[in-house]
Amino acid sequence: MGNEIAALVRQLASHDRAICYQASTRLGEFGEAAIDELIAVLDDATIDDSWLNHTFKLIGEPAVEPLIHALQDNSSTLRQQRAALALGAIGDARAIPSLLAALRDDDEEVRAEAATALGGFTEAEAVGDLLVALEDESALVRAKAAWSLGNFDDVRAIEKLLRATEDPDAQVRRGAIWSLAKLQVEQAIPKFKAALQDPDKDVQQLAVVALRKIAGDTTALEQYQATGSQTEAQEVQRILDAIRPDDGLDESEMDKLRHSNPRIRARLLMELGQIQAKGAISALLTALNDINPAVR
Image (cartoon, rainbow, N blue to C red; front, side, top):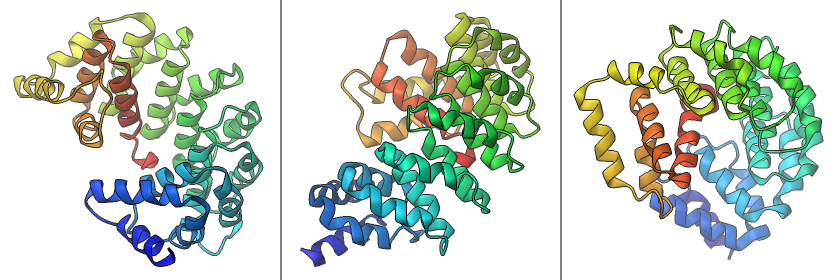
């Protein structure tokens, strides 16, 4: 069994997503027996974070304590970062104290991934520390905190998120707009309208989506779409024709939604919203989150 587990862990580094998915699923079936091998490769940069997170989430509760120990081991910052993300994927509340402590780590990337991981929880005890992280000296940490705060329906976050829409760093502004839209904060509408003129194209795109979501404002969408080309319109239609949004999405269909062009992503979101394709919308919102380079 040990040799099979080791071989499956190595397959997580494959460039073939189907192989990675099959290996991850099988490792999840092994459960606790696979944990040591997985912990050992947390600092292996050839394995994508998403497959480690997926595998640990499948294993669940037995992986929590080993991951907490990995998070507390400062001999490898990459190991700490990935342990934090995996704990966020599992969502076991036992990890919260260690993740809150990691928000004060000397390494900005460890702090950032701790902020990301805390977005996977619903416990209000994380909000205060995330608000502190929203004022971190590191733009990376501020951005991760901004994105995560959208998962907490807590009035304490609103004022600081409103201020964060004017942060000097674009990735922070993106996260703030996204979270305010997700929380459906109507008082943020003037901020969204101002963001339509933001120098960052992805901030503009998120502002368009936010206005459509909260205010039902299609004017901004129409103006935004008007800046696109006929080629973009054809690409949107090609993607819509290639997916089955109401039947659940496989990995290849998810990839189609993660388009590099922000106008295409915005148009996809609007089109999918009109047909109430909830599964596809969820996938696309995740892809929109990924436009923030700090999230990957």
